[in-house]
Length: 343
Image (cartoon, rainbow, N blue to C red; front, side, top):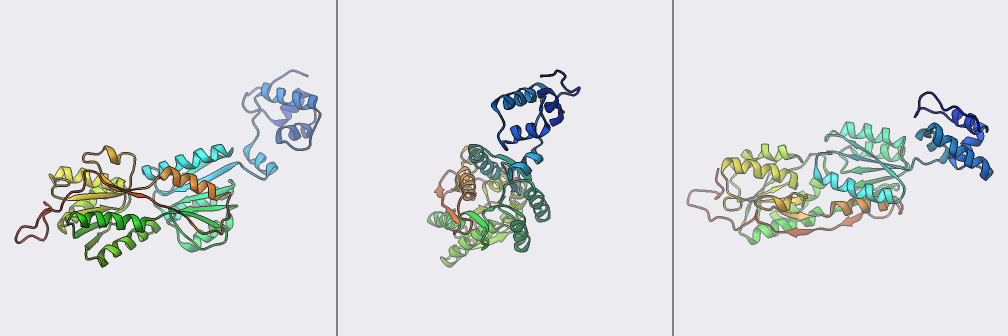
C-alpha cells in the first residue's frame, strides 16, 4: 500500500482512498456502498485506507446508491412546546432502534413555512412525520405526493398513502368538563388553540357535549404557547367564569403565572385545567388538573405506522383524567354577581 494521506484531514475523497489502497475507484465504491462483492483482501485494504485518510461517504451519494437515506423527517409547529419535545423523544428512540436518523424542522405555527419545510425535507428522507400539521388539506395532499411515506400526528386525512395517529381529545375534554360539573362549575371559559389546529376542533366537540349537558362555555381566542395563556387571562376573567380550560398545559402555565400576579386564588377563586399532562404539570403550585396523554408513546406509535398499512384506519391513543390541586368546588355566587371568580 502506498503512503500519503490528503493534506486536509476530514476532506478526503474516494480517489484518495483508491490511491492509498492501490485499487480502482470502482472497487472503493463497491466496498463502501455494499455493492457488488470484492475479495476479502481488497475489502480490507479499502477499509484500512478509508480510516487512514479519514474518508467519510457523502450522505447524498450514499442515498442514491442505497435508494434509502436511513433518515426520517419530523416537522413540528412549536419546538419550544414540551408536548412536541416529548413526541420527538419517542420518535427518535424508535427510529434509532430501526437504524434511522431523525431530522427535525420547527415552523413557529406558520402553515406556509410548514409546507415549505415538509416539501424540502421530503427530497432527502425516507419518510415524513408531521406533528399536528396546520397547512391546508390541498397542500397536505401535495406533501403526500412528494413523500415516500407520510404519517400525521393529530390530523386525519382520508388518503390512501397517509397514516395517522391521533389522541381522543373529544373524550378528554368531556372528562374534564364532567369533573368540573361534579364540583359545581357551570360557567366555563375555554382558551382556544391555534385556528388551524385539528386537535382544537376535537376539543370543541367535547365542549359542545358539555353545553348539551347544561354547562355554559365561553370561548376566548388564545393559542398554544405559555405567553398566549398569560395574555388571555384578563379577558377571560372579565367574563366571570368559575373555571378555566386551557388549550394545553403550556397555556395553563401562563394562566397560572398571570393569576398569581393578580392575586386570584387557584382553586379558591377559580379552577384551572389543562390538557396533555406536560412534564412540569405535576410540579406546579398548585399541581395542574389535566387530561394526561403519553406523548412519548404517541411518537412511538407514529414511527410504527411507517411499517404498517398507510390506508388503515387511524391509530387512536386514549388518555386519562388526572386530578390535582388546581380544581376545587365552585364558590357560591354572591348576590349581584355572575360568578365568584375574583377580578
